[in-house]
Image (cartoon, rainbow, N blue to C red; front, top):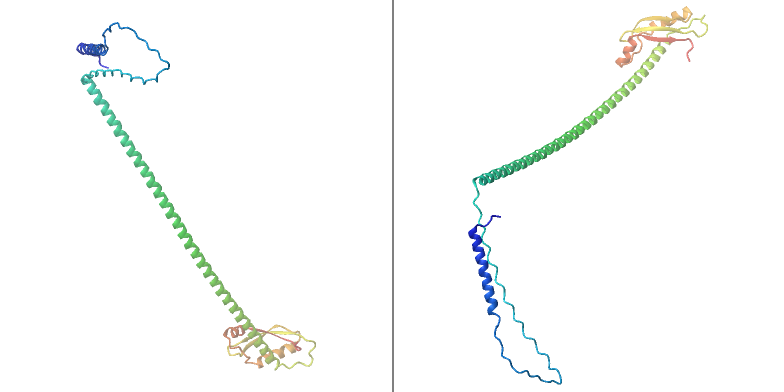
Length: 267
């Protein structure tokens, strides 16, 4: 608080003295100072007390005067040092505010970058999952198609194998049938020797031409009786041409060499 000058102190003292003088005069003139003369005293006797009379209104006390206004405070003009200090403080405040704003912007920027990075990772994760799902579906489809193709191939192979087995069975049956026909034709030309004993077995390998003609007959295992072996060989050559199947594969097996067994007594 700035101390008052001597002139201001004298003005305040004169104003206080004036206020006390006005208050003293108001007090003097508001009170009656007359002296009443001496009069005889009279008394009245009452048999009963009269009704109480309302009390007169109390005269209001005079309102005190308002206090004198306080003298205006005279603020001293700031010095150049104060102005420089305030300017320096204001500059520091503005610099701190700018730093705070820059930090807020930087924080907001980092938050936005983190948010964008999180969104990018989330999108990449979603894309990766989608790609994995699509790859899995494609792999499942390829495996299913491969399994179906393999199953169809195995089915075709099995069918072909069954067909080959059936063809082989039919061809073997045909070969066996024609072998029996050949044997029966050859047996029709065998004349058993008179001195034949027992039931010996002679085995010949017969080589045939494509038209069924006998190229040659080779004794593979003798029966032990020369006359019977010679008679069987003679019957083979005499029965030429031998019956041949129409199936080329079966006929080829005959041309590669046919092994025939003969006994005097069959069954």
